[in-house]
Image (cartoon, rainbow, N blue to C red; front, side):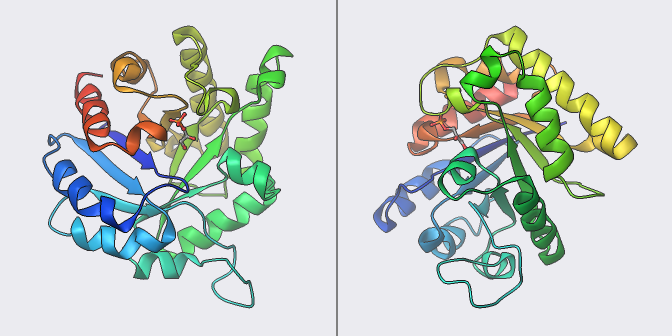
Length: 243
Ligand code: 13P
């Protein structure tokens, strides 16, 4: 399976950053899928800057309904209209900052799919949950309750304690969790579960990307901080080709 390297810009980035970044990522090697998820305000301009390339654009959230009186929210169709093909849903920062639970994430995923977007559903345990030996149980439960029936999107395993900290799980722990996620997807969706890409996210950098991306059942990376610099993002894309 081709690997997907997705950049989550979170609440970073300015209009002035787009032209240089887009020009650089257009030079990315073939053989790896690239996706940038900038803040909403940059989506349309980013999509235009990347129009002649295979680099895709995505949102970082969408509402569970198609339209309505929801101040500050954005619908899946609006993301599509701005040029997005993907949307990140259920990121741990949204689960924490906005109280999004599995049912909310599932409803958003259904809305995204109905509008024609590919959802990237984030799952991952906290440090306390890992220390309590509950990491796999927590992640399996998130999968069971966040993924709608017939799910054909992407799953991103992002241990909360590895996000923005420079810490990553051991190779053994990533391997074990990705195997558990693959088994869970199989139990939930049968044969279709084997086609779901499982990304790893949490402190992916040029220096550790090749190792992480080479692990079994790692189908790409969801990259935060290192996706803001085109040079680092491209280095991770290169590492995917070796993974
Ligand atoms: P960092 O790569 O900055 O740790 O962020 C990971 C992440 O949250 C991507 O969604």
